[in-house]
Image (cartoon, rainbow, N blue to C red; front, side, top):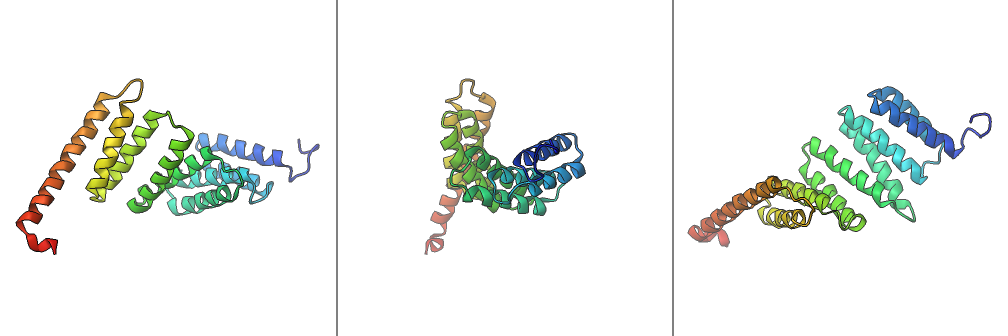
Length: 205
């Protein structure tokens, strides 16, 4: 290929990126990064395909527990996608999902929630009938809201998760029961909070 094409031909970018994927899949992250960077050097920085390469680089850093560098590359991937005249919704799904995971691993629940909500927003557009994924997303967002003590919002999302789960071809009764248990826990907490306000009316002022 090198004899037939100029060094900056786009096919080189695809080839280097794919080689990087193979190295990454085998746990050879050093070689993966070398090839991903070659992919970037043989493509324009704002080309839509570069977004995937930045995303892949971010994945390598996340797998090696360097979440700050991972997020730096995820942000670059997102920036390129947002500048595209026609956005690739499936790439956006992946970007929002991995950013959510990276922030969660860093115990930044606020940012994790932000990107999971963006993930869900795109998911509902791209895969409107994928009720299994909808249910999982609603449940995970509900879990994050619960950890933030935002019980009313968590309750809403657990109910949406159950509703989506019941639309799947093979609903998981175990998962539904788990979410119903969380709903009962939330209702107890909300009732207790309401009773405390009644017993201490000055807190209402």
